[in-house]
Structures are given as structure tokens and as C-alpha cells.
Image (cartoon, rainbow, N blue to C red; front, side, top):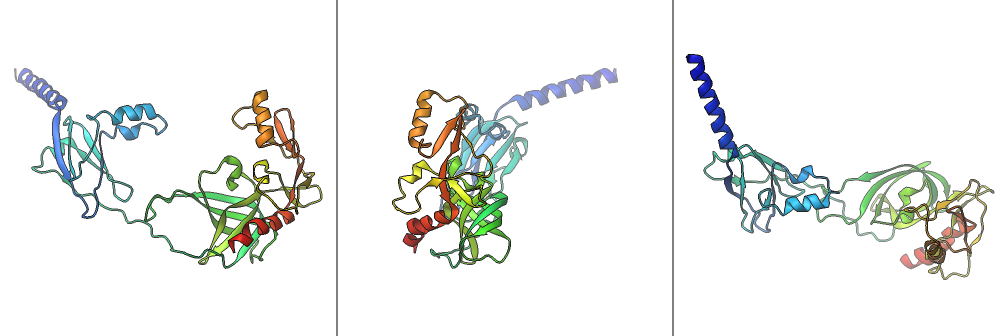
Length: 321
């Protein structure tokens, strides 16, 4: 009899627990606001949104529209959302604050719900107004390592540029002498196309300046280079940029590279149409500078590194100074 009674009580208890957890409750609270701005906070039930990959935009948009799963506070910090007692609620306040998580059942026990975000110190950045570098290192460098730098916690607004730390072995110098055979420098890039992103090449003729004691690549200033049969360095012609070179000197010349140099006609399509090929010949791979064989582009003309430096001095450096 006692066992039957205990089992009955247990079953009834389970029923009430399930019933209780199945009921939606309204959670209202306040997120403390700074004195000089309005802090918008992302409030998500069960971290639903962050479980969906960034690439799945349709699913993320669907969740964002569901006010039973996602909400934000108003201008005064007030928020309200419905949830089950068994749910969790996640608060995200921005990159300089720790995210917070609470059980709904714990919040239900409070007379007032006041969330006070805890800040994370940002990383201060060195201020430098120097425009002309103290030293200029121009060299052909072989890539040893280029690593992405996370700037999300830097003080101030979000950086539009991607930051890299780079280490190169110096193969040949054309500017001031660097005391070590390797060089470490910082570089910045803003969404460059593949061919204009220096990180995609093993060897580059690159221009690095010293600004406020730090070595920094002059932004976007580099040429991809390849070894030639006679042991020099040279780059294929950039048809797009060629029209901006007004100098009568340092004109393109026939180049024979030591190892075969070839590029895909289209990186996104291995079988381009005749119309696409004609367009590429016109704007990117002029027949004057390239030949096309079996879907590959082979450079037949270029400039030697020595001439590139002279051209760069004339068209860029003299104007910068």
C-alpha cells in the first residue's frame, strides 16, 4: 500500500513539473544604461540564434523575426520576453562586455530583474600621425609567415582594414639596408581582390616604412615577383594598372621566367565561355602581354624589379614626399 501511494505521489509530481515547465512566463527587466549612450542588447532564448551558422542567413533571419526567441531592450533599458521556466536566457551587450546567461527559473525568483553588464577592457592603440616614414625598406621578400591579427577588442570604432603580422626573408634589397636577414612588419588590407592581396604570393617586391618606431607596409604597395632565367626578379604586366603608368621609361619587356608561371583564366570557372575569354583579354589579359593555352594564362612580358622600383619612385614615392 505504501509503495502504491509513493508511486502515485511521484507520478503526480512529475505531471506537475512537466506542466509547470511547459507554461510560458513573462520575464520583464532592466538593463543598466551608461550615462552618455543607449546600449542595445541582444536577448535570446536558449542561445538559439548563435547555434545557427552565419552562412545560413535565411534561418537566422527567421529566428530574428521570432519575438518569442529574440528581442532587444528599449531606449531606457527595459525588456520583456516570454519563455518557459526550463529555458535559459542569453544577453549580449557588445564586444566590450561579457555575455551573460541566466536560468529563467532563477530570474522568476527575483522581485526585480536588473542586469548590470560587466565591461571588458579594450586594447589601446598607439597613436601615430607620421605620414612620411623615417626609414624605407624596399626588398624582394620570401614569405615565411603571415598571420591574421584579431582587432575586435581594439579601443575605438571597428577597423575597416584587416591587420596582418608578416615575417619575410629578404632576398634582395633595393632601398635602405635592413640589419637582419628576416624582417617583421605589420600590414593592412581592405577587402582587396585576390590578385591585389599580398598574402596570396610566395615572393613579393614590397615597400615597408618605419612609422613611430614600427615597421608597416605602405598600404597596397607591392608587386608579385618570380625568378627569371638570368637570376633576376620580375613581375608580369597588370593590364588594368598599365593604363595609369604614364612614364615613357621602364616599358614592358620580354621576360623568360625560370619556372613556368601560369594563372587560371577564371578562378571561379575552369571552362569560361568564348565571350568571357574575349572580355578577359580586353580588360585583364591583353594578348600583348599574355598568351592563353588550355584555359591557362601565361605571361610573356613583364618588368624587372629594378625598373619596378624606379617606376614606383616616379609615380608614387615622389608624390608622397
